[in-house]
Amino acid sequence: MQEIAYTDYVVPFLNQLPRGAFLTVKSGDKINTMTIGWGTIGRIWNKPVLSVLVRYSRYTYELIKNAADFTVSVPLNKDLQRAMAMAGTRSGREADKFQECRLSPEPGHKIDSPYIGECGLIYECKIVFRQKMEAECLDKELREKFYKDNDWHEIFHGEIVGCYLAE
Ligand SMILES: Cc1cc2nc3c(=O)[nH]c(=O)nc-3n(C[C@H](O)[C@H](O)[C@H](O)COP(=O)(O)O)c2cc1C
Image 1 (cartoon, rainbow, N blue to C red):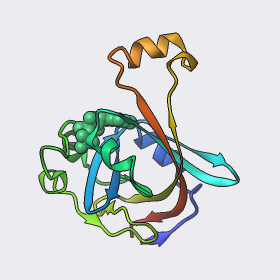
Image 2: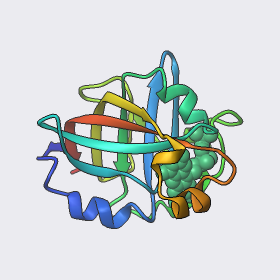
Image 3: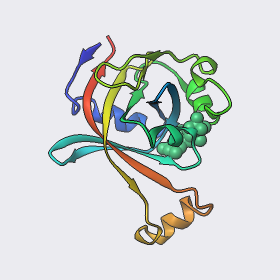
Image 4: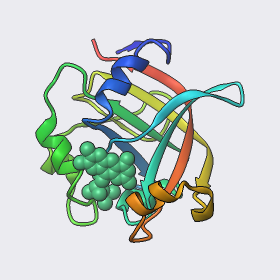
């Protein structure tokens, strides 16, 4: 693993995101991973920040709401579509997705949450702000398109404390 600047792979990250990346969280003795397709990388509070959106219905939400940190693992050269589809439809409530999707949780370098060993690009993030969405603050069209069933996202902003490229 080679540590890189968080800015080095922003374009590959954003290009992969619509196809999916893995959000992995540890809380207490529980770990889980799920597929995400939305996220942003930027600079807030003079810090590099990666933000992810997690709906209340996800098992991941139950973990991340009490967690200190998370990782985002991005497939670069490997085809992990099958694992991605499974991690994005099955819930950690029902199954150990690491076993089921054949994904290896590797211990984080600087944080408690593990990352996915099969991925080429890893962001380690310390949660610095969590934000519930207020319905009336969102564009009406988006509200109707994405939140008809009231399953809102909470947005977790993580300071990027490590960014790594698998060798
Ligand atoms: C390509 C793709 C992208 C997804 N993006 C998100 C996302 O950004 N936020 C979210 O809450 N769920 C997203 N999901 C849905 C979750 O991955 C899915 O509901 C998963 O089964 C939740 O697992 P969990 O219950 O173990 O947390 C996505 C699913 C797919 C297939």
